Length: 219
Image (cartoon, rainbow, N blue to C red; front, side, top):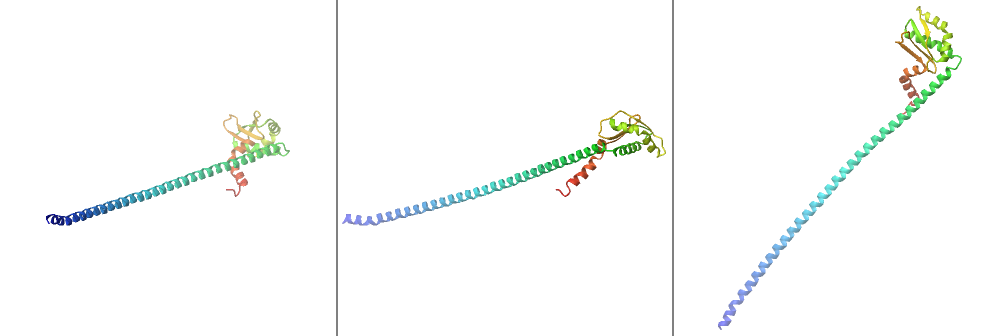
């Protein structure tokens, strides 16, 4: 009877211990599951944040690359426009020079024409008047100097019409296509009415006029 009593009293205790162990194990499993869940959530949050940061960084880099590309494009375009303008101006300048060269050639041919003698005398008289001196020295190329010497009296008569006596003399021949160069006897003042001198003095004015004629309406 004693053994049964002992055995009968111990059975409920073992069962309670088992239930307690099961409760503890269940609670531990639940805590472990909660910890794992929280860890997964934190890991996912970190992954999402990293992905967002990566996307933002990618967008930033793309924006920077786009802006840089646009800047390079603008610089290249601006440089291309400058080079194009330079090329256009260069071609225009070449055409203008060719126009002046043609003008010089026409003047040279005119100097061989019969009517050139009258033009030469007129140019000489006007040059002497511009000089505004009483003693002038006239120079020209060898051919024109010969013509002027033979027309000295005509030149003097034209100059005397201004009620002023002007003494003229002739210097050594100079290199020129035509026209004259007159100077005071002391050589301090000179008026250049050679073809080259006339073109040089009027270069800028003629250049603008020729450019306007050649490139009217061009951009």
